[in-house]
Image (cartoon, rainbow, N blue to C red; front, top):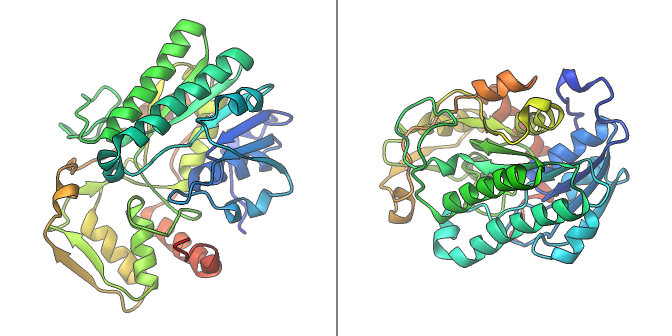
Length: 341
């Protein structure tokens, strides 16, 4: 596998001998964070429930499997969490139910994982690791219907899904535990992630990766409507570097940040970029299905000036380069991801 680069400002021993916990660490973003943290000298523990519908994949940790401790557990298990967080300097919480469509279909499950699970992590840290920095993976879906672009952190909350509501609740929990108990918490609102290590089993999230799978399987790419809606597609390694940079900065305590590329790409353009890199791929257009149109937010472009100001982070990967690298990754490691099991 290709060595990943962490932010250059972190090459001054910030991570040496640090005890790091990555919850949801076998998924795309979590495993990328775990790998970078190991490369930076941290001692890393990964906790993941490996639930079948989600992104946990042990191959994602192949590069660092001999350098990490792995705990197969669920964030809904309070007793295990209380033990695992002990002695940790940094806790990255990436565990979640991540399908906005599924959240509306099964709101109780979404509540259980994305609210109860988050409180379990915070309670465990409050009781057994109060000095740890706790970083929470939130989502652009907290904004819902977009009123202006680029979207800064003060944009109104117009949630259109249970998922967005519960992610916003997760942010509020982190702010409460910061204000009430002094926990060093940070929430990062991720735009539209894509890249190596993402699950390729279904299309319920991660549309860029799903389109890459369809193209590689010689299937057409379907665009709803005219596909003019703009999205901020952000490469997974840029996201992971943002989390690491936020963990290192003293300015991020109790704050919320957007994490994106800062660039809007029309949906149909995204599809044609993928089609151009996988010869023979066609793009077709059709009407919006009702369950997707209901949660369509309109154009979304992240205003990332706040995180740029408070940390050393900047996105590095263009969409063209990110798609090229993602296709290259799955061509090389297809057998580890082309499964419906």
